[in-house]
Figure 1 (tube, rainbow, N blue to C red):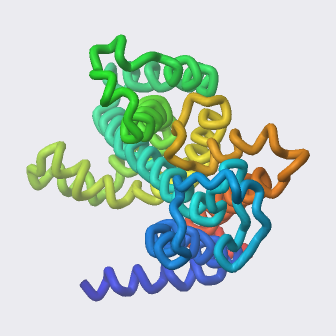
Figure 2 (figure 1 turned 135 degrees about the vertical axis):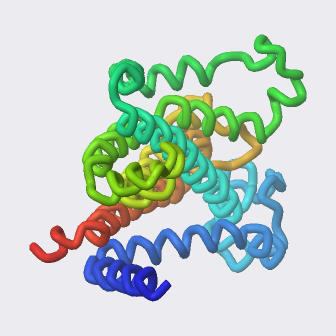
Length: 302
């Protein structure tokens, strides 16, 4: 227990030295808290995220609408907060799902080696060779009702969320898998793994209790960086009309709706675009900070 606290303390001290990463973590925390607080902000302002008021179209910022209103008279601030809930949920959930799949495949390939390693890595190489965005566009355009899913389910808001999460998870695990495989190949030759084998520990226990904690660092960093990529993918798919479907707001489909209004109401495109930009930059800087903190040799060279 004491060793764990000391290790956590060293990690926090190393991470704190990376000021951009700390600032990025604070920014992401603020965005997450603001997104979670969307219903309270909506109630406090006395507006509705989906409430249409054609008489208030393109309204300027005011006490009632701090960021003004859009082309349908909806409050821009509240929609941005609800859009953050969707975009951040999709990014984090899809990244975690990809990390779980990639970590499992990397552990199996690196620990057992041989034909299993060859098979899993050839599958990984095949997925890496596929153009991800065109593939997601094609799969995102599939009519779910043709797969036997009831129309009321296929057209629901949850279905559009789950579709993106599943698609990204199925095709976005390759980076984590390769990193974990490489770390596992190195870890399985270490003395503590050989000692566990000599004591009769099973393969499952060795992988989960001895190897996984020691190869988690590259997986954590890769997962952090994946969040930003997923948010960008969701934004692109929503921009093309294949992602999150209205009336459920996301930063991507808000940007889509504003593309024809850039000349008359440019801020409707600026706000969601700015939030996407800041979130992706913050996530990437956070990943750099985690990488430095998890590898003391990098910090020592600064």
